[in-house]
Image 1 (tube, rainbow, N blue to C red):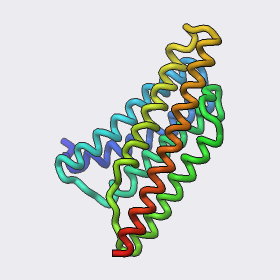
Image 2: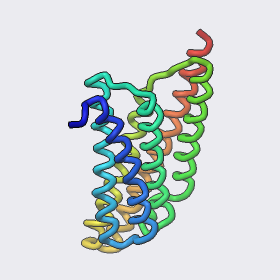
Image 3: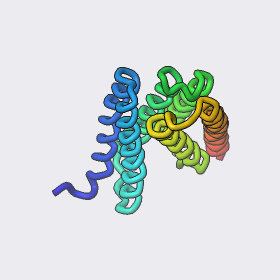
Image 4: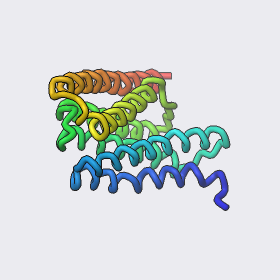
Length: 193
């Protein structure tokens, strides 16, 4: 029987292990069937993200492994999914959106490490949580539409849906920037205290 304190970290490991399968299904195979499997894998991975956070808070299970690997697992999963949407048949975002989101994730990660070394710790803010929800929700909807619904509609309708997804991810990119800017502002304000 696995002790409850190990479950959040186990879920994080599962999420990390899902990534190479997701990449293989979207980049290498990239068929209708493989994208359906990728959809289910991404939903499972997203659920593990919610569940490990919920369990860690409920049972007050905070580990150094979890502090590092949980956000890292999320970033790797989302970046791989967005890359597939920019450079494969999915093609629902352009490389500008991908670049903005990736730049923010790396910049904030580097900033966080710098401030941790200085003994400054900042809790995740609401913008960061909104950003993560928007990214994962958008990816799930794109995968679901492309894999299960797209072929039931006309080309004109599909083009309209494609445009809607593009607008959604531009909004997500803006929220991503705001979450990063807010994080930087909070850190500077904290540093002055």
